[in-house]
Image (tube, rainbow, N blue to C red; front, side, top):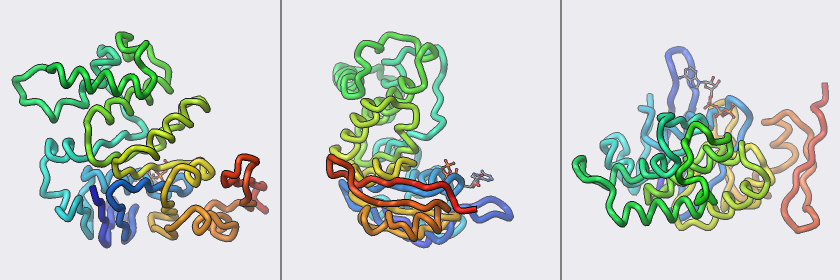
Length: 255
Ligand SMILES: Nc1ncnc2c1ncn2[C@@H]1O[C@H](COP(=O)(O)OP(=O)(O)OP(=O)(O)O)[C@@H](O)[C@H]1O
């Protein structure tokens, strides 16, 4: 699915939070959204998901204004995992993942064999098979995060928006999740704080600062020492690690 933001602005009275963003995400592309705390990444993702009404500009999915889609139509096309995703506490892990099937069913029909197959596949992909019957409230932060991702996969959408999906995960699960994200045929926009991970797994990076999109392009175009100094206020050295992946080293900011 193609996702487009045209002259997109959003904010609250007295504060512009997303400022005149122009962005096109091509079908199947994985775009990494980077930027300091408070730069507007989550707000932009919510606008792209159709959960915020722009104060100016438009968000289009495959050319159609997202504002003209009802919540069910949106849920059939795009899955969004927010940073602070929460779920009713009495559910089992498999029930939480089954919530991803809601838009696919009529109101009166319970889960069928296909829904169960999709949920099982999503649980397996996120390494949650052994936890399927565990109560949601007993899960660790990383297990909850993986459960929400499994729910998003069970939605079987053409697009996926992820807000810092690796922040609670151990290293192995971070790598597995980023492999999954970069390998999926879905269109993905993923907010990340780990710049090296963003460089390694995303087709393209988009850098936000103060609500504006200040750079976009390949990792080597966006992750430059002058730009990182200007936006993150750190001295950075960009090189390659022993595996050949782009690596970013930081010095403390000059005072
Ligand atoms: N509903 C709101 N009302 C007022 N201010 C808001 C609202 N939503 C976001 N903000 C502010 O807008 C700015 C951008 O927030 P946002 O969560 O989009 O940033 P972010 O780049 O995702 O940050 P982080 O990296 O810390 O997750 C912040 O200063 C935040 O406090």
